[in-house]
Image (cartoon, rainbow, N blue to C red):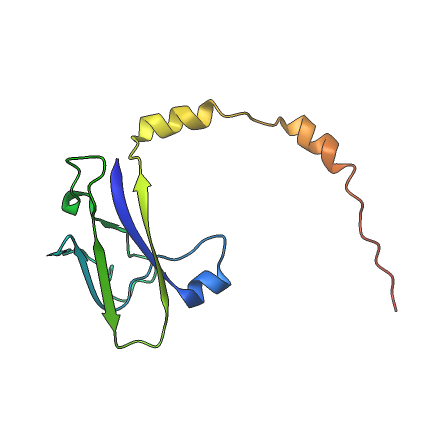
Length: 127
């Protein structure tokens, strides 16, 4: 299990609800339990969409179930607002993902074709 920090600008969030681009502010400081997180928050230069979430797992205290962890995020020099989330992520191998996809319920082509026949077709009239 990994703990990942995700960020997107509110502009991206408002306009691309289904697939949000990961983007962090250019001037950003992230501290977990007082320790600065050194991560590539910018991605590849001039390559939109190349930023990845930051892995903050190693910065967390996990000795006891009731241990408190703090995350302090500061950003500046931007008019954009950003939304940040921390997610618990399970890392899986390509083999595990392939097996999971193979075992999913699949709708047959004939079923899809049969059901699509019942979709009402729009009528177009010349004006």
